[in-house]
Length: 171
Ligand code: S3P
Image (cartoon, rainbow, N blue to C red; front, side, top):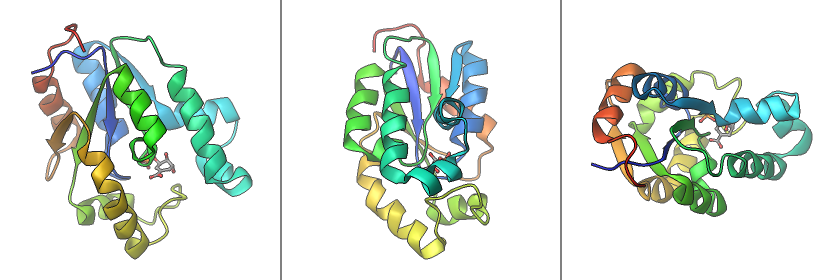
């Protein structure tokens, strides 16, 4: 049992970080922040456009700035993007701000949930996605907590996470 100031949901595309995050925030009575949404608001263009027009490096820089702007906030659930916790600098920042929670799902189920991946520039077909997942696994495994989401709806995942947390305690 832990009592973090803030929790950051991490894990591959399609595992339900945003939906579970929203539900978790509701259960805990905490604020909810969707990192991708913040990036889109700040940039005034969609994630796919940012990647197409400015590239992944630029996207990651903005992602880091948006993350850093959350420093000091408490009682907050943050849904990260699939690549956020895979980047060392972002990982260090997240670990200094609260507890990372890996929503774990077999890659096949995550791929099914991604569908055609129209809005996901890092989804370049099933084979590439599998390889990307393998590369990211060591980072995801470094998360402080893990939750097995196989066969669960995002709301059930949120309940499972809430049961692991003691809100308000020391990080
Ligand atoms: C990305 C995942 C996306 C979004 C961007 C990059 C990734 O978020 O941040 O397209 O690198 O895996 P979701 O995991 O919510 O799809």
